[in-house]
Image 1 (cartoon, chains in turn red, yellow):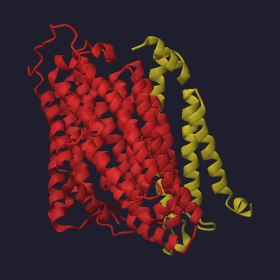
Image 2 (cartoon, helix red, strand yellow):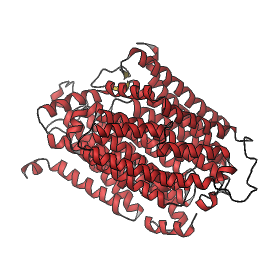
Image 3 (spheres, one colour):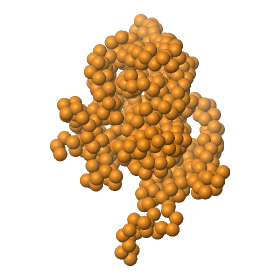
Image 4 (cartoon, chains in turn red, yellow):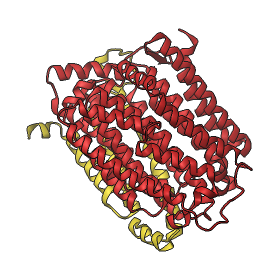
Length: 497
Length: 123
């Protein structure tokens, strides 16, 4: 076995040990250990991605060298390695961009704890991405939930604790459904490893055995993961959780935590049920309808909002709706579009949260729109970054959001049954996005009084500006250089089967 | 109907699951929500334990040199139950600590009341 095949295991363990050593380190050391770990894991994932692209096939890694039906397994393919790399980039940029807010918003003695949470979050995300065992996936889903709860409430105010409680309640309902679904599925198939389950599910489907229980498990697992990733009717906790937590937490929650669950769902669809079986169940239509409703109602709530952070949070509801619409359309092309939107939304939403933090800083800490008037002049970098993010969300060419909308539209045209609703809602949602994002951008660049020039350019904010520039580059790269990435996603999904 | 009585263990587990789920979702009182969470999780463990049990067989610990598979129940669901219990204990502890935080701040366990208090605070 080549040495490089150990990298997924190393990545998971490295970030987990980072979480273990952080509490005993001084705060500065913990910060640098955290950054170093994210960078190293990113580099390992990049090396693995290049290796997998070269060999062109995925592999299964035995944990503890117990063979298939007994041991625990990790599986790595192009999509997994690419996701791990992407998650590391987003996490590093979010941490850098939110570092100055972290110092002011989180109590000094709790700074170390924040790095524990971030390291554990990374480790659980990597485990969700790489694992080949459904029960391991469940355990790491719970670890992910607990760290996310910590990330919300580390900035201790009444609002964040309440948001954390609401988040936990919704999340636990989701994990209950997920666990029940996984247990029933284990009883039906008698296996816990995805590849073995796949064979059994194919056998059951081919012989039309236990059709109803199988359908029930698909429903339980999909709805459990949909609740956890805040699909439309289950999004009540989201605006408070994203709106009042510290900037880097909000960026990571919206772009990483919910995406981890969606990626797990995609993985279960391909690796456990097989695309055909999942498609033939009618659960896809349910996901499709809720996705469409989320796209509209999320945007409508965002329009009504008078708080920039909560507006961006509600926009997440709409974007999660897009991803579930892609999954719900039930074609390969739409699935590729959905996975691309995971990347595109993650890159854009974290950019918006980080830049909104800068804009509220120069507006006396207020997040209300009337105080934000002209903030784009007071903080040119954050203003430019917010504008870039807004353009990407609306779907202007050159930015990543345009490509995902294009892919969704192409997928909708090829799907005769769902073409009309998908295209109509896509159009309406784009207009609604434009209404609230352009309204905000215009307000940011409305002059109030002449003496607005501020000296806040670079001084003391090198990291923040660097993170914003990094996010903007990431967005433009996804938008301009999309074809290889889309091909890679297609190849990765092909490897899943 | 006959199926329901034959698999009464699973049926009871499902009923308990629904009771716990509804408690966690609908109750306003945080402590009752946490109780609901525990009922829900225990119901899943009951279901798993039911599924792992094979009538007339023993605990999967090798005694008296009996090696045959036919002598023992399926040990994997028991292992899953143990793992699940660890998860649900830690989650319950986290929820209880959050509840204590909220109670100290707002002197109530009613989540809706806390929301109205927060709106008045207007932070």
